Length: 142
Image (cartoon, rainbow, N blue to C red; front, side, top):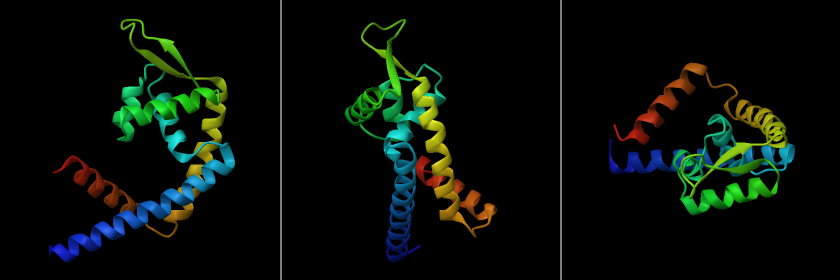
């Protein structure tokens, strides 16, 4: 692959990501009142089932700990998560999704699914799976 081909791949990847993100963010925000970034963090917290820390959000979403802390602060102000003392580390806290957070997340997930369905309409599932696998390989550095 030539340098020009790699540049064109990069441009296509980034422009597609921005377009899909913007469409998904618009849908999620309209439905739930939370930005897609906040919903992404909320999903991480929910998937950890009460064991998530700010560090987990940062690592999973690939943002700094400071940025993750700010997102969690916003989610806490919105009543979507609460911080509880970590049972083994007094300097740390765990994050739990509140009942309001669970309801908000359900609404946001439905809106996100609709936006992603619209963005990928007409693309065969096998192509989407191949693209996901290639992107995972690039991210791992294989």
